[in-house]
Length: 608
Ligand code: AGP
Image (cartoon, rainbow, N blue to C red):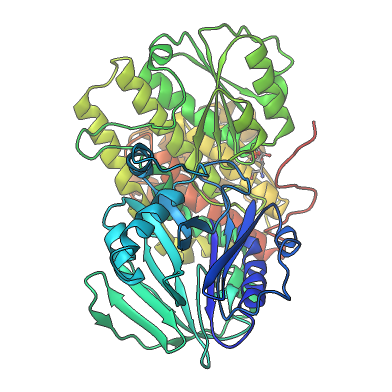
């Protein structure tokens, strides 16, 4: 996610803002910028890449400003570039933004028809022009309030105007902003670390609230202008803890971010009215989708597990045959790819060498290429014919968590869109599938209340030498993912296996030291799974069941039975992943492993 910081007080504002942006670097970014008032004018400096590049374009001797805002950008619309970096300017107004403005293209079209020339590809610039236009007839507070009524989506913004250079106006909806209350100095930021070295008294701005920072202090108002009085809280985190939002590790923070990441990935991609999936940025001709002969989904590691799940979605909902390959295998197997085929690469980083090579090979063979990716402007997205971004925000932990679940959600949306385009599913079915998806973030939140039980399971088995993860159907790739998470984080060997296949070999591993993790859904071959649990139990194995219904027949056979919320048979793959992520995390912590940066692993494998 992007990072925002604003300062007003008696220190050098540019220095405070630059240091604050450095404290937000952990959030991941690809460009940065700062705006500061200078003799009634507002100067803006921006750069691509790291903050040190920004410092190289600022002459600090020039800027003794006491008011400034800054931004680190994690691109969601428009590639990383100076023009797309924030702050954005429109006339006398300058602003920074974190979030996604869903209707920016409509707003942009209106302004372009009025003769405006946009200097960036961002959604933010459209909002900046709205505010500037309104600021001609009202104060900056009124201009901000008027403008946010015109936009849909999520936003946290900080705005300055040359008409009132002594203040910073902020407002938020579904994207965080926190205020720092210092000694005659005031801060606004996306996250506490940005100003924790200066002050630890904070007020968290709530949705649909506006804050105005001036040398007189901080005023909070609702969107009708009524004052809101709220006491400041004291933050007792260390800066390192603050970077992780109070979580012990980035991995745990990112597991907990999944409801928000899924909501952000959904945002702007469905119509409540029609129940349709709306893929603006789709980039594939509808006629081509209708004419697809076969789909190849190719990836590595966790992303390959998402690909395996996507096969079930697309074949079931869109009726298109799907082949799934591990990228390093696809590129050498002489796949029979034709020009009516669609090749989908799934890659969090967009830079995985094997996936890039497979994508290039498919393109050479004539396939249309679509990249499902989390990093705007990465190689995979630049080379593909079409891109579907997962808006999970930067994933810092090496072990992929929120990227995986947002990949699954993206494949689910694509399968619905394809199914509608190819006449395989009707409006009613589409609406039901979408409703199930809209309920998913809330259901995942409720899984977190089982974390103590998951910790107990981790304590019971963290000394085991080997784990089996067993499931069937669409949950089999979840078993693979659960095993991979455990291997990566705890260095314990673990194997994901189709439960029906266990008797053909792996059952020889079963004894009283072996924990077998069963992932079960009432909608997916339930009775068969019960007999598989029995096969392990009857040989003395330890049984842990993750199920959306711990019925008596399962409870009798389980050493631990963790019940998770029910959802449809497709999204059960997301729901059942979350406890497995937490189990791997807690076992890794109990073993004292470096769960954010496990040994031998890289976040992006950019070599063959
Ligand atoms: C997952 O936890 C691992 N970090 C790894 O398997 C990863 O999924 C794989 O390297 C693919 O990375 P990508 O999604 O960036 O292409």
